[in-house]
Image (cartoon, rainbow, N blue to C red; front, side, top):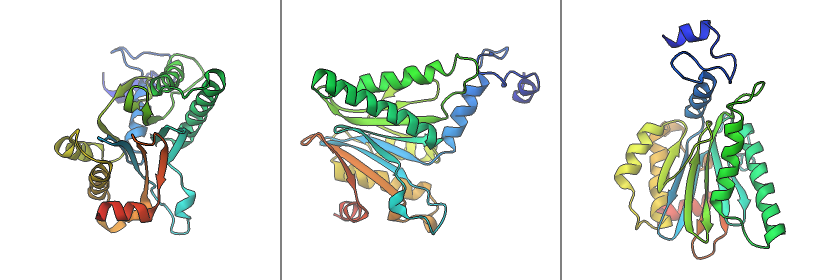
Length: 240
């Protein structure tokens, strides 16, 4: 049965309704939303973990610094997303509350996997509950904890995977090929940042690319603290 026939028969009108071939069409639509979102790249390097994303400046009058697409979950954890970023904001705020609550209760930083599982539980709940819609966003969650440097990707279904390097959003296929070719476990943060930004440059029309579009952050193994990078810092790193 073709997708249009599915729609005409109403299988895409409720999240709890399976189509005859076993698909939840609302979830598939949410995944398409992610593929149309701003590009976000994550990479685990030898000395730290990186998140790089495209701010997608849609208006020349917008103040670039006012657009934040990488968020701090805790001192040692950061996140970014592709898709409906208002959905991402709600999920990140939940993650921040969970991390803060864990610190207050146990007087120690939360592990990254616990944060990821909690976010995915919420996403999965929205795929089986009437009157709700799936979260139209994939998140990259990265940082360091007692288990080392970590990078996870979550999708609208509530699934999550751990990666060494991953991309979500627009240009995913093209950038994924670059990551497969260029990635090595021995890369430094500086080398990884160069690869990520060059991949973004190739995925974005060259005329529209500039450093003001880049939002980048790192968590170094040595400090274990998230560090947002300014345009000046990014420029120095990629030229160094």
